[in-house]
Image (cartoon, rainbow, N blue to C red; front, side, top):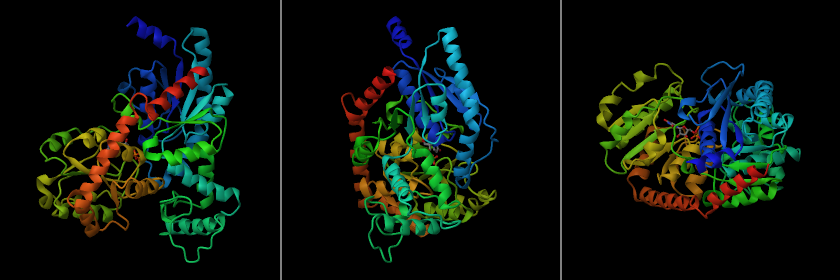
Length: 482
Ligand code: UDP
């Protein structure tokens, strides 16, 4: 016990700055738990908006910063402007808070702050760290392949071939402008290339899989990725991925990066179990799962931001009902753009499904995916959900909604071959066929086997002596050297 105490006091403090969204808070707090278990003191500097729940992490310090942002549900459409605003609003209060912390540590002989670790989307932290003369490290919470595909888009900008085509309000417009720009970049004549064609150098991505934004002009999107990928003064990059999943991409990135990259993921597998949910988890679904047969349940969730319209909800519902496969479906508050959606699920749907379905507002997802009854995951392919599913050996039905989700879905279906991608607009017949392919057919069984193999390889990779484990140790050595 004494030794543990001594060990702890010899380690400095780390200040963590998460982006205030579930898919970013989770990996940052998981990283905090891992580093805390290695002896570091952890202080989380967070916005008042979507504040994490301190009682879930009694071992951390939490400091809330005024952000001048109102508490409201943010939809995917608002995401880029919201993140820009966050970066504009937070710089000054964060700087003041950090300066006070540095002063206090000198006066009160508290553990000194070794560095600031910030989410890649909280890019204002770079300037703040520089101002208070502290080293900083970036945490990337998206995949390495997403970085490479966004970087390819940035290259286009640097070469002057990507220009604004005026307001683009739909994905087709954004894709069309990228097609013409990418044609010039790779100097290849793609007469008649379509969004279905493969992007040269970014196998297996098609033009339609590129993580472009369908909101606003290409310029707004380009400014956004420039901000998150601009090389600044950070000393290193931590990545929530690993060599098993993304070695070629990681090697390519290390060639391009001036600083060390540390793929230490999947963070949720390495971190001691703890929940960082912003919404209360409904554990009754675990009781329901207990009554289901092994590998039969399809878990359905589109994460914390994506939403569907009333029509899509109806097609999803009837596709699920007609498949006759048991399902556990998360319908998050605000995730359907129609207040009246509940009516839709009472008109014959409840009778058709009976005990075969369970709907909750929010689930303990990691526990659900680890449950033996769950045989498949219908996911939007957020990077955390993708990692969590792979880590439990659960194959997927991919229905990406926006941004990096399309890149992840493509890797699930084409690289790791552990899932099916629903390509068209949500239609009940396609949904039903997709569910049968994954849950019943031989094809789905083979995917499940590959998913189990990948799970085992990941388990090995985080064990002592393997690459993710070694990467974490090297990261700790670097932090201790500051
Ligand atoms: N999640 C959860 N319960 C749910 C749905 C999601 O705990 O009912 C968690 C999930 O485990 C994951 C996170 O929310 O860690 C969602 O992150 P992801 O990157 O998959 O998607 P995003 O919400 O960022 O789109």
